[in-house]
Amino acid sequence: MPHPGIIRDRHAHEAESLLAHTHHLHHPLHESLLKAKRRRRLTFSLLAFFLVLMVLMTIGYVQAKNNGGANMIAPSATSSELLNARATKALDQLNKLWKKNIKKKKKKKNVSSNSCETTIILLRHCEKQGPGVFDHDGNEHCSYLGYQRAEYLVDLFTGKTAKWPLPSFLMAYVPDRGSGHWNFREYETLVPLSSELQIAIDLVKQHDAHTHLLELIANREVCDKVIAISWKHEIMPWLAASLGCGPQQGCPIDYPDDEFDQVWQLKYVLHDDNAGVARQEDRDGAGDRAGDDENVDKSELEDESSIIDEEQDHDGHRARSLRRHSKQTRNSSSSSGWYVYGSTVYQNFDPLAFSMSRGKYGGRPDESPAPAAAAKSASTATDNEMGDEI
Image 1 (cartoon, one colour):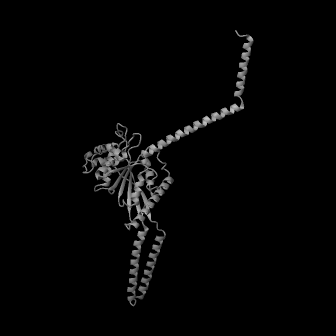
Image 2 (cartoon, rainbow, N blue to C red):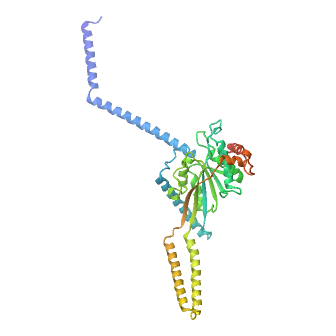
Image 3 (tube, rainbow, N blue to C red):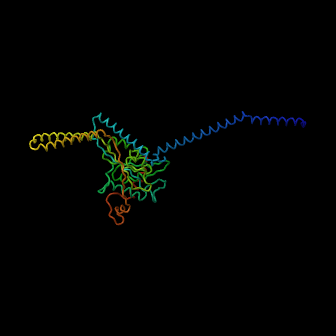
């Protein structure tokens, strides 16, 4: 057994060591080192968090863009300033493409008529209220009333009571909305019209819709033709502005949530003042020559009525002066290029009248479009082909 004195010395040594260690922990240098270490850990943690957040945001953006922008938040298109700015940019792009095309044709000496007019019709997709709008996979379709509206569009473009010219191109918002979710409403809205006219429906993504259309218009490949587009109403103002039609051009700043009948018409007109001035100069030259002939005739008849001749000569000189002044004014204020004129019209779809026109309620059936069920079956039959087409 150790001597009691030895035990006391051991405990005293341990107490002194513990006291020294405690004093070392509270030393200012040691505390500053600990604080610096904590700050480094916190900095690294924050950097790692923001790095992971940026990676996730980038992945989400890429997926949304590849899926046609369906998962992206719709731009704040309710702002008139944003829409007008985007429309101005689109018009500038359209006119740049047109001038570039003119230069190419001049080199090839293949300049055609400069007059051109094209109209784009923007439609909202069919109705979505009622049973059967979701299939067993959760994909979205038109309602019963929506399929009837889709058929009614055929009547608006065809037949004796057609309201609009036959469309040469059909375009719809791509059904694939990402993450295995499909919305066929924009596509199904144009299916009966596509079947009737035997025109394929071009399926496009949100950010690709305007590019090809502006090129077609600038190259004057769609002069005197109509393009029908079925679209999602929340982003319809943004599409119109991307095509050059903002509030300044007459396009609305939004599409009402409870509205399906409203139609936006975008009329593109090529104003080529040079061609107009040339035609006017021909007419003015003919008028001047006629005026000179008239003066010759007046000189021959001067003896009969000198007073009348003087008045007529004065009137003829004044008319020529007015023509020259008008021509100078046109030349000074001329501005050749494409312009867009937006307007809002309505389909005037009457569900009861439509059903009656298809033989219901004792009505007399029309000869043309197929019933709504046929349109729906046609849409379902093409669903398997959509993946390849997209």
